[in-house]
Length: 404
Image (tube, rainbow, N blue to C red; front, side, top):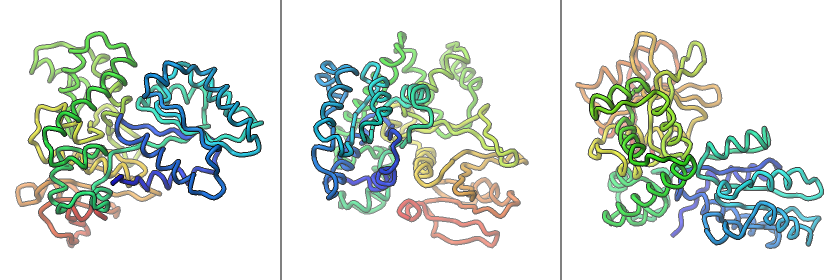
């Protein structure tokens, strides 16, 4: 049974009338190719779209396709196909487009040719490679869609696993939600091997190959160290200090910041800056780091048993799906708030904890109570029933929230 990414398909349907390039980014194996195929099936089922209008022969994950294709012959081939039915709109799909040298030249030529009606869809794993090229060649003429791993709700609603919500949650927390992983949740040895291969592919192809990294062992040490900082407030200088204290190795500010940037460009991590609500500005001197998949996190951290920051990472990924903007926040009296989320002019504060009890009540609830504004305030936890406090703070059961 194949899981349908309806949210993303709906977004692509919404964009159908827009001529701009549509670009899907996300880590390798997250399901960009599957999503394109599902969207192609939607188009094929439309009465006004015929099979010859869909051009989906360019998958540059395929070594043979890549070897036999140049930007010139791809462009010529697409134009030849369109010339057979020039009055019809055509849909061009290209997978892992950044693998093709000078791909921008072909896309720009096709996009600017007003004698043809073409709708272009691209996927890519390295967001920086694409954003630089798109920003240079297609300023204001592309729409970006970040494809994330499956949500807990998508998995539960699919009925692909005959398990309780809590059992699915335990697997989700440690094995992540990349499509090929979900059906083999019970097979720990196969999952570990597959996650290892996915992680290696991401780093080898989207970091080592893209940036021509020479000292691979050094980079992998920093990768492990960065993943061990998941959910913690960090600064580059603190990372340098911690690395020296723990491993007696000296790194420059530029080295650490470059490596973090390369991991984020490959969609392996997301950095979360602080938000200044009063000044409506983003503060990047301190930030948090989260993994874009919990299974890949398991492959790259030495702290595999820590549930609390895994849950915080899980919630962060869910927030990316639900809100327009997500940041971390510190009140003016120095109290930390896990997340501040913005959507359509509304603000929501969230605290996240595995277990809410007397020992952490002040940290989780008290920090929210210190906020004087009337914006929505939520505490997510596994051991509570959903209810409101007299202060207006909403205490929410985490699994209920993930399924809502």
